Length: 396
Image 1 (cartoon, rainbow, N blue to C red):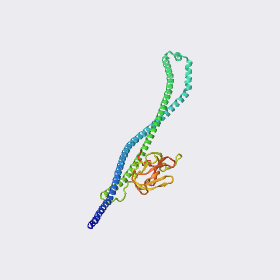
Image 2 (spheres, one colour; image 1 turned 45 degrees about the vertical axis):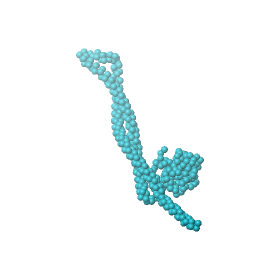
Image 3 (tube, rainbow, N blue to C red; image 1 turned 90 degrees about the vertical axis):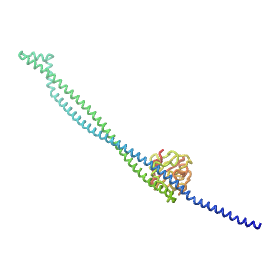
Image 4 (spheres, helix red, strand yellow; image 1 turned 90 degrees about the horizontal axis):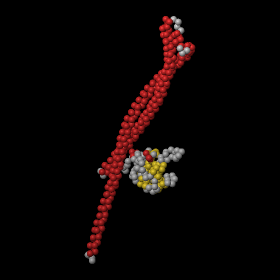
């Protein structure tokens, strides 16, 4: 008994020391693995951001190519319209000259008709007297003149004179009547021609004005395309800088270095490509100024089921997460560069102030608006100013 006790006492400390050693090693390994796990998480997140930035840059490049093709097409159409406008302008000038000549011809014809009418009025007494004399002679008027010749030797000369007088009377009357008919017909033709020219002038002027309006519209559209291309290039440049920073962060992580700060992407280059904060329909649109029908609103209201998850449209930091008078439970995400997204009328807020939130991460749940029905009030501010969220969210 006396010899056994010391053996037992001597073995117990050995077992206890070995266990402590194992525990120490395990704790050391676990503590050493924590930075590796965190580094792997940072790497995964940064790779996801790189992929998202790359996809968006490709989308911007496709948009730039589309705009360039659209501009080329519009420039061709604009050239066609300009040629058409020039043709219409030249045609208008030709028709105006033709119309002026028609007016000159019509004025000359009218003057000639008035001159002939004056001649008719002047010759009417003599013609009347001549007709009376012819009437007095009766139906055989020229025969009587012929038979009244006493000198038979002059019968031939008298016969020719009578025939000439008769023909002269007929020709004079017929010619005068035909001249009046021809002048009236000519004036009618000229008036019809003038009406036709006036109609063509009106049609050509309308066509030229339409070509001018179409050309002006194409010019405005090309200017808009140029503006969008400039904006596209600006956004692509901003996104390229962010992409380069992310690549540098990935190189640091691959070399075992700690990232200098949380990786992030600017929000502005994602205009038109942001995810919707909640599934629902538009109940009220953006209206920065009040009208007779609707009050002013710096955001939109999205009708959705109560309790539906509300998600961040872009990564950011929670700048505010508390009740706010008139907006219920309110959450504001700071996306950097004076860019914020606002989520109001929340049933609950699940993100805490100061927390880093990823794109698509739930930040709250849909509650009820002050007027009663469930829905989310959503606002987007760029450079500190409210903008229409529908121009920034993905089209539906």
